[in-house]
Image (cartoon, rainbow, N blue to C red; front, side, top):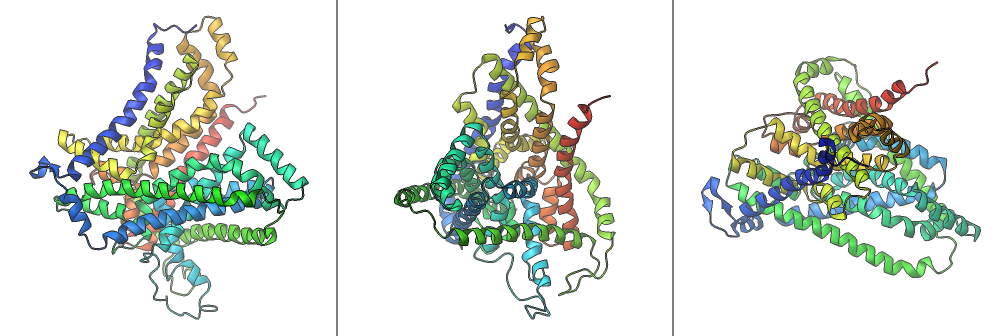
Length: 568
């Protein structure tokens, strides 16, 4: 029996509500803070009448339609490629060891910040990048870098490549995670075996017997990356065109412009960005309905194969190409970080030096300390509320309501570029001058959903028999929580903490906007340096961006082994 009068029990009871309020208030206030200036109400600039001049200015902006087209097409095409590649890999390596190896190889890509991935890909595909160097001059015949606009091409091909390579591991691993759920695993493996026993070829059998069951569980992650990629900042900013950029990048530039009157146009652009995201999601839903309607006859026609061998060879080639590109991008970063003079078309630097690392280390301590401090604060708060909210579920013996669960994931479903601008506007309106706490709050909005999601499964599967025995022996709810439950949850708590730190390390827009340029993290510095400074210094910053989350996951893996290793 839970003592409802204790302070701990009262706090646990309130935790889910506090958690939801902590997430929903900034997002709603942020959306309101964009809505009012978008319609012309911005008293700080002397604008106190409502109108649509922000939208008129937006429409008259040169290249506005192309901005919309870039945002729409790059998100839709990159997601399509990521989903198709995932289905090819899943279908051709289903129930195979290769799928586990690919999962292990692509898994670490998830924690690489988008900015770091964009810079690495930019190094790879640039006219003087590693790909061109490997094939020059013996195959390309080029003794000088070719005159091609890559990255920053006007059609967004570089953005599509960057988003596809970054989102492919997410879609693939979410699908694998769904396949490993006991009830789904039994269904799809049973249907696959029946299909194979009836003479269906493996890939055709997967598409006809497994995919229709599996795809509904992939839909939410797919919608999440559609929403993210349509309003992404880091990858289009580094790999995309500048004249014009995507709408999200343009909105960010207007907002940061010294001409404060552009904030009305920026707010109108943020609202239009929400419509673009909704349009992308609706288009994908329409495509799903078309595929569902058109594929019904194909699924039931009894045909046993559809060029399975060709699909298998194509999958082998594409998988190797993706892994090769990722490995080459990482190798390029390391080489550039140690390169002294590296003339084209040499595939290897003339000399390796540590000068760039020494130079960066003189400038990095404060940046690294700010990065880690913000990440630890946001992750600590997220863990605190996630643990108590999950404890509240167990005490009530009832899961969070669907509405509360949706609110926890709200910051991931609404384009961040929309509500973050609003938060800045509200912050200025009420005169809040805090920098560190606002940046932590901005990071918390994105860290909390991932921490809650990663911790919830382990907490809900916790064996409660130990807790019941402890309670029957007279232990208070608080003692049962910290002395019985938490020790059993050390590994998932550490993994959630590492994931939260990785998410915080990768945040660019919340740091830039809510920090007001007065706080720098590795990600903001890396993006700033990537736009014009030395490629060698950029490589050092990107590698540091990769090492910090990697260190977190190594500690999360190592600490439980040291704490719980068998003693003689």
